[in-house]
Length: 138
Image (cartoon, rainbow, N blue to C red; front, side, top):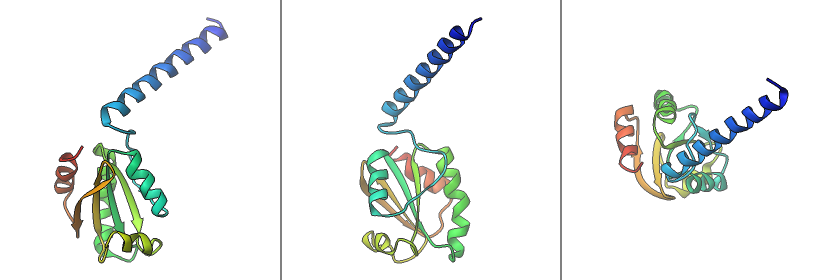
């Protein structure tokens, strides 16, 4: 097999992978969500995320918050196991964003569907409860 044959085979594999990715995007109603939480760095970033992904779960948290630490592995698991994109907003670093969404206590989770806030949950919830909530909109 020549180098040219190898290059053509690799190109064909890449083309097939891109086509599968595009089909997955169409089926999901938006971009395929990442398997890890996305750390939001401001209002524009959050707006971009809610526009890019069909369903987005946003965890407003603080590093000093004990319940937020308890929720962190659940949030990470949801990012890996659900079709929703999962975002994290540090309320100390993004006080204006927290205020804009009426976050008065942490943890507060907001669920966005098609760019709109559809659910608000305050406090630690189980993975099953949050997964069921996501499934209603995914």
